Image 1: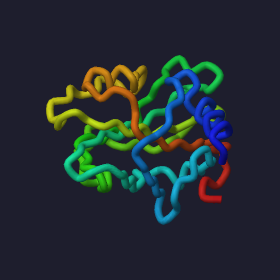
Image 2: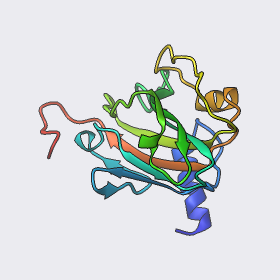
Image 3: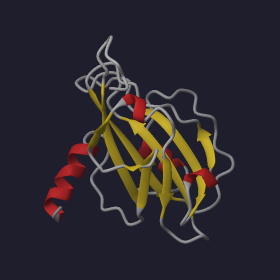
Image 4: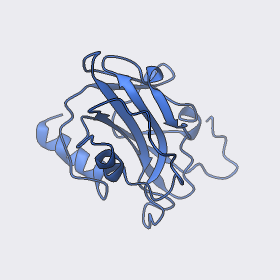
Length: 174
């Protein structure tokens, strides 16, 4: 994908969340054995368990992973946005997020209306984060505010995918 197409895809994924940026730290996301391809559409049964996320960076660096749904409850009227689906801090560079500290447990996507975007942001920490206050609600989360509060600045990594509401009575495994 050329640079212009890549930035257009990022603008679409990040609309109403933040300005597009160029990731500088590689991040691989796997649901089961399958690698996530940015902007793909996944079925709810595929994403019910937390993905395996492997990041680049140096072992002496620490990172935070934040996953949000900016389309809650309805992509056309996201008045509960942003929903935080997962937060893992203190991930060593060059490692899996399983080596970090889970602050907000993973909740798999289950959109009730339309197609929702799910965005995983990777931030580089300035220091170890051990004193993060509990998140009072998963709704009305602000990923940029969270990053600024913990002195992390702009994201350094990004992955994103879409999930469509499953029709009633339809086999979710089909």
